[in-house]
Amino acid sequence: MAAKKNDSLLKLKKQIKDGKLSPLYLFYGEEDFRKDFYVKKVVERIPDGGFPEFNHIKLNGADVPFSEYDDAWESFPMMTDKKLIHIKDSGIFKPKRAKEDAYSTDELKAFWTEKFKRISDDTVVIFDETSVDKRSSLYKALLKSGTAVEFNYLSEAELVTWVVKQCLDAKKKMSKQNAYYLITLCDPGLNNINNELQKLFDFCDKEIYKSDIDRVVSKSIQVIVFKLTDAIMAGDTRTAAATLMDLKNTDKDAFPVIYLMFSTFEKMLRVKLMRGATQGEIAAKLGVSAYIARKYIDSAAGFGVDSLAWMTRRVAEIDLAIKEGRIEDWAALEQYVTECIWRARKNAS
Image (cartoon, rainbow, N blue to C red; front, side, top):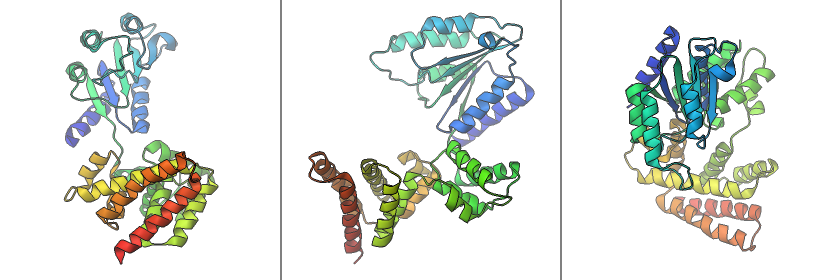
């Protein structure tokens, strides 16, 4: 599977380099930064001839009528050899659509299957999707005429290499160790990491140190929650209290934090129950990047199955108490953390 993904990206890179583009592309996946990068690269290969409204057509969303697609498909390029149609989030590669959609699945299938067969030599179409179902008939139909490229989150090693390269391009220096530290503080996705890098570039001189990262980078709430769960695992009441205070000072509501803790403990529990699974298999099952999966694996090792099961069940009771007005949400979160620490200590003794 991985080889095919790499092959399709290599094919895309060669097509862009040679200027011999496929008539039909499907770009999809959660890594928007890379997806947007290659959309721009394809666009750069198709001059708009001074008439972008005719030669660079962009259609957004799943509610575009067939007639608008027909107009885009059938129009001729203006003062240039090719035109581009960029279709964003059409949703046509998902098997199930909402009941209120204007067109039935059969109508969509018939319309798009015909369109895929009838792309003229003067047209390049990019479908820019977040997710697709590779089992869908339209996905398979597109592959007969075009190229599908999946853009997943990069691995830890790839992210470190990417961060170091971005620093070099900006005439800055960062060690691989500090690059790894940076990515562990950010939410998944190059957009998030890039935003923090730009802040570091503005703040730092020639070299970026760990102290700079600690001072400048905004830690993701998931990272803060992992710090909280680590404190619970270690029975470290002082660190847990300080972390809660940090969360409170960010003006965040307690409710999302409670549910993120629930989600974290629930994923740890699933990790504990997936005995013998590889990091890649766990990442796929949890729907997270590989380096986040590693954090779940490492954190889960410090808890027993019974403790994690109790910690997830307890959230439902807290939720009810908050909704019934028996306790304020921040007080409930503080109480929950205290109970979790007590539970972890009890099981460790």
